[in-house]
Image (cartoon, rainbow, N blue to C red; front, side, top):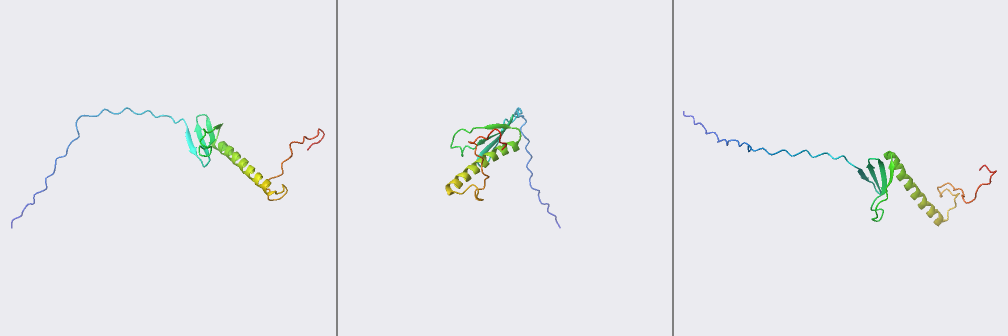
Length: 128
């Protein structure tokens, strides 16, 4: 019996990398962020070095440059400022609908407490 040795496949020699070394790139300096911007549905909140700022978004301000308000110390303060604007808008819309529908201020549909008439000044002796 003869044993045939199978020839092993030829192994290609490994190629080494070129011996020339590339100069290392200088480290890119890390830039401190100046601001962070968060886009909400109709508002833009921005964090700057001195605090939080809010403005109506560009789409809701008809392409005009936004009017920034702030700085607010905390994001909660900026959120409360936005909530005040939304509350005023809701109140104005509701009051116009109530006037249009001729709902009496004492009716439960009015939804708002009757506002005092500020055009009448209280008398000096009156404590109310």
